Length: 383
Image 1 (cartoon, rainbow, N blue to C red):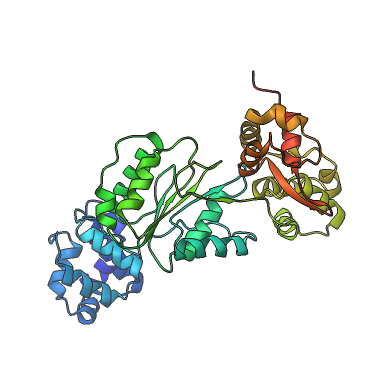
Image 2: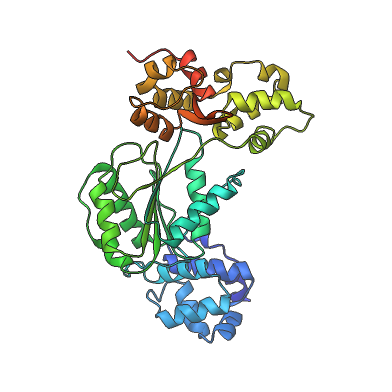
């Protein structure tokens, strides 16, 4: 009876217990085992399990942790967490079960071909790729989808502007330190390179917004021959060997799917097409405007200036991306082609998602993104 009572005590009620004790009791309670039943399944003594759960034994041997994990039938990620809790000061390791991309809250709409193409390039030899495009085009979500595909072949070390989802605290500390140094130009130690060594791994540097310490990125690639680096940024970083991957707006069918995701009524294809074109297939803009469908009818939204329907954060981000090129963009004709004087400028505008190619009967020309034209018209120039 006492043992059954111990099993029912939620770990959260005893916060003074060591992490391993709390985690072990949580796993045992979750699967509904008594201490005796876990002992029989794991071949670890009842006394040892009791001492571990009560915090009297603080450093279980690796073999003991392995046997308990097998008795609990833990998956690879839960087993890894138990091992880290048993020895939080152990040397960092690149564990595929723990080195994973962040979990997306919603499925990516479209982009299957682009995701597969970039994932294949990274898996087959591309060592440095930068995903570029307008704010709100979904660079982070796309990078997570690519990393999810690549993770089947190698660990993913994700470093975002707000931290990392890595489950190993020692490895997370090293990846965060490297990311911070790259973003700020600080001193980069060789600790991450020493841990990764010659094994394959995808390092994702997400949400870069400004210059980076390119030498630190290239040094990691030189020291770790199996490493690939994937970066998301507003524009190319100009690093040696960089493969630039421009992420454009969604295709018309995918744009309509995202726009109408929460709309249960009938939708006029003409109004849907007008809105999707005005928003240039930008996922964040489509989601923002789609949220208005619970308040206003679709024809009224289709006739409204799209900038009036965007949230302030996205509007400011788009205006900020276009502002350095405002005079050029405002003076460009509806259709234009490259010239000897504008070749490099056109490349910069393309990489930033401010203009897009248009295929015509006479060949390829370019046009300013319709959403960017609306944003420039709706926002005053920066003094």
